[in-house]
View 1: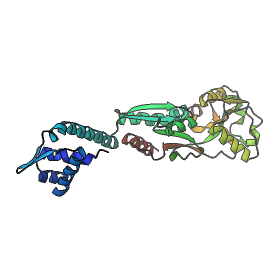
View 2: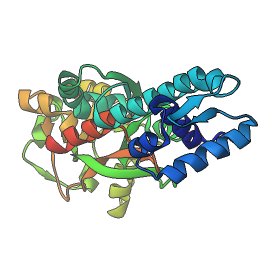
View 3: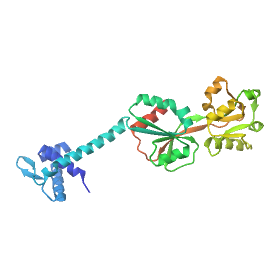
Length: 297
């Protein structure tokens, strides 16, 4: 196995032309420098220096033959170290962010824009997919950071490090159900109306089903939809009562296209978590993005 430290000592001695000067530059003792040269000569089976009264001179059949290659190799290694150091202290390279389309749209979009303005040299790859797929991408090093709807089944390869946003699920309706404005309703009461719920096998649907079942109610939707935007459109058009995070309907609630039903008790809050591969090396570009999320909370 190549011992790089021996070649560093060889290169320093050759450049300085003296064991003493090389020892001073390397911050080791002169005997240690001499021993390193002898060890490398033994490994290579040839003298690398001519020991002169005035110092050390590269041998024609040893040191001179390898000096240029050793110098080139050490410079390449130094460049690698510089790149890794730069990665730890400056935002460069590519940042791969994984999340659902909804999380990108309603939670991360303004943060990503702010990050790009601050670190324009970082290339940002946005990977839009469902949470289980984002988990797999994190585990196979195809994604640097993921944002998941919580709670999520524990995975030993993934660490949920933070909650970046709270989601408050509410029941909403359009003008077709204006008679319900201001009226207090129970989850039992909702069964009398057509319900629009997100499709099964999603965290959001599991949350509303668990909430209703904890109150002894099994909600049976009239329509199951695959996206929040489609649900908002159908509810606005009077097709039924929808259940979605308030944070995803703020504009329509503010503009009066939708109104929030007064359902008691209210559903508990959910959150969006930041996920990283376990024991991952976090470059500066990713740390800067995480810090930006913390500042804007």
